Image (cartoon, rainbow, N blue to C red):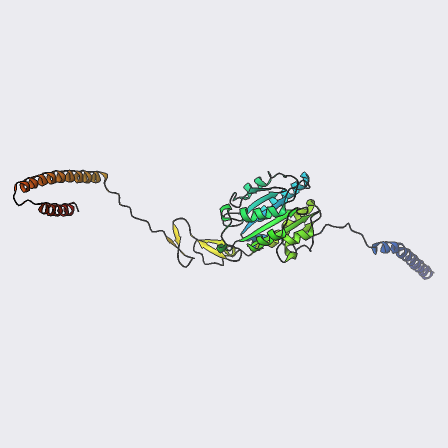
Length: 362
């Protein structure tokens, strides 16, 4: 009897488990259907080309260092740029400066502000520290109406990229880079001026914002255009371009990795390096080693001896002149009383006496 009731109880338990399992499967079906639906994501603002892969900060600091450049920012500050938008431009400039290795032997930075007129905020040789540059950036103000981009490029070429303004000579191999940021269509001719700037060795990047004319950006920028033309929809995302330019301006610093033969100071260039010497040393002909400057020996005579010598010379000269005068008068008296006195004889005497006096003075 016990075995019978045990069998019945087992059958009941099996039926209950199967029913609950079936109900569980039916209840999970709607959840599966929901999970297969596609989730719509809000659109994101992008660039004209996909963003470059980002590296970790550790890798950037150890392997990526900005090469030396003569870098000029050309910033559109016409009235179409609202104050809050121009503040984003200031932040972009400050962030860019933070990514650079600035200094006299590293990257030098200048900023040109333009609208209908052009204002050079500071030259390549004005500031040498990030702190001073960022302080100057915070004080930049918008100008007025108009977008004279061609005039701004010409000012960069003829005023900012000159040795007098801090640009380095071509033989050092330092690249000249201009980054133009504008949100409008140029109101002057840019194609010819930009071509002359590129021919002069200036690499031009064009950044368009919002209403910027893409065709004008392409006319200004260097080749290849895919690497030199950028577009963002609003000033609110222009800061994101900092990482793009960091990748672009990044390069292998030969001096930093120690792959050079400089004895004292190594200075990196865009593609190579050159050597310098510390104060008190001269660079040798091999352009790598240094030698101490030859120190000149300057002998300072005793001022007392010099003064005594001058007194002696003055006394001798005075006495000689006195004796000479008396001697000449005596001879002339003798000659005048002599019957042999002639003009020719006198001339011969004076000539001989002149050469005798000259040899004595020597």
